[in-house]
Every structure is written in structure tokens, then in C-alpha cells.
Length: 131
Image (tube, rainbow, N blue to C red; front, side, top):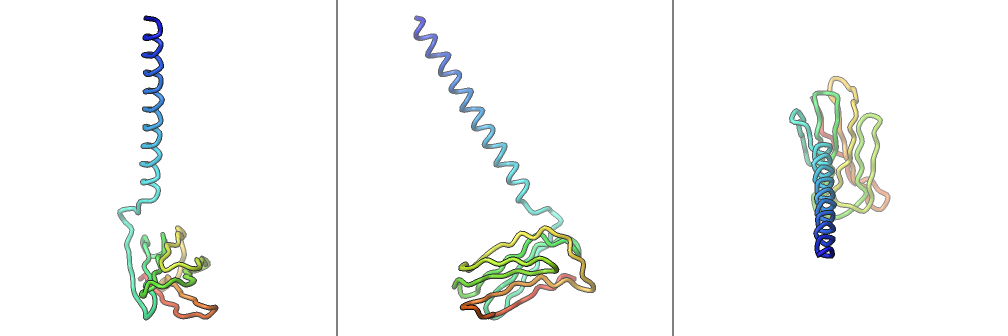
């Protein structure tokens, strides 16, 4: 009888640990979702050039959240993003999202740009204008 009671206690402890682990995992996942989700007030603007498409999520006139640069033909290259003093690059990909999360002042319009380089040559720079 004592061995059976000990097994019940062990299984209850195991269940509690599992429940705690699952709860912690769910809490972490929901917190991550809150951090990475775009606010309701964010606007998205995009445009395409000959070789790349550039999209940006922004709030108001001055706050740039991110810049996504995609090659139109799906071939990899060195993708770049730049706006104000922000400069980012990623080599060997055909699509990349650059997280900016900065307030950048430029009047009358803010130019959010992306670029594509291949074999050390600039193939195209393309910009989205935020009014």
C-alpha cells in the first residue's frame, strides 16, 4: 500500500511540473507575440523597382519600425536597407526584414530605402517616400 501512495505522490509532482512548464511556455510565447506584433496604428507602404521591392512599416511621419527588402526574381544577393543614420545589410538572401524601431526626422518627406548588390556591384537602390 505504501508503494502505491508513493507512486501517486510522484505522479502528482510530475503533473505539477509539467503544468508549470506548459504555463511558462505559453506565457513566454504570448509575451513574444506581444513584442513582435505591429501596433494597430502602424501603416505599411511599399513599392517595387526593376529588381527589388521595398516595404516599410511606420508610425506617423517620423517613426520607422522595419524595412523589408525582397528581390523580384527570387535570386539571392546582398540586400541593404537605409534610412537616416540607420544602415543594415544581409548577404546571400532574397528577402530580409530589417528591424529599425527608430524615430528619424526628415522634412518634407522621409525616404526609406532598400538596395541590392551582386558581385560587388550595386544593382539597384529603391526608396519608399513617407509623407
